[in-house]
Length: 140
Image (cartoon, helix red, strand yellow):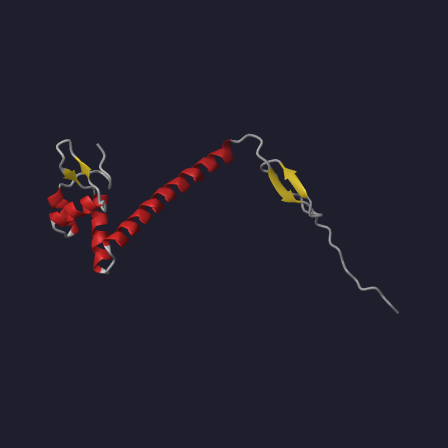
């Protein structure tokens, strides 16, 4: 069994002590939906380290004068950001796989006259090495 930050391992008294709060405060936050611990089959609350971090953040925001509704909004936005970041990583991995595994992928470059040139993957455009010297016309 692996334990990570979202493993529900702390009973309410331990979570309250780790968060620096009274257990009744944790029950209130659960009722309000600010921090929702998992429940055992017997109905007891089990808090994860992630829950404890959220409780500490709630305490910090509360001490700075943020209302409980404001705290709910902040926590919701943080969860949304976490979800979106995970989705971005997933899409980046899918794109990388697609780029590597797609047969016949095409590479484009600009030709010497500005036209679009299609290249095979792994090739480079040959550059002209000729030099052009400009001299003003003799108007005499």
